[in-house]
Image (cartoon, one colour):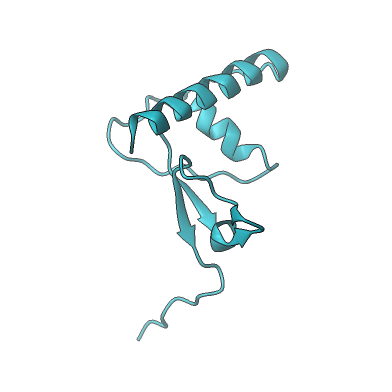
Length: 99
């Protein structure tokens, strides 16, 4: 990841954090400290703002699992942007049957 991508992610993250604090009056109360190593966060998707909120409030840089349709070209480009930490997932592919 390049320095410009890191800076862009940092500024976008803090823009949304401040916006959520001011406009939505979001408050964060951690029930226990987060682990220092990797962890998995799962959202119930109450709205399309879930990835924005999660990206703004969690410390560090998150990677998001995204449907493969977001990586298909639309007009002249792709939906996903290069600075976004997205992992592609094909929802139509079936997992192998256990034996």
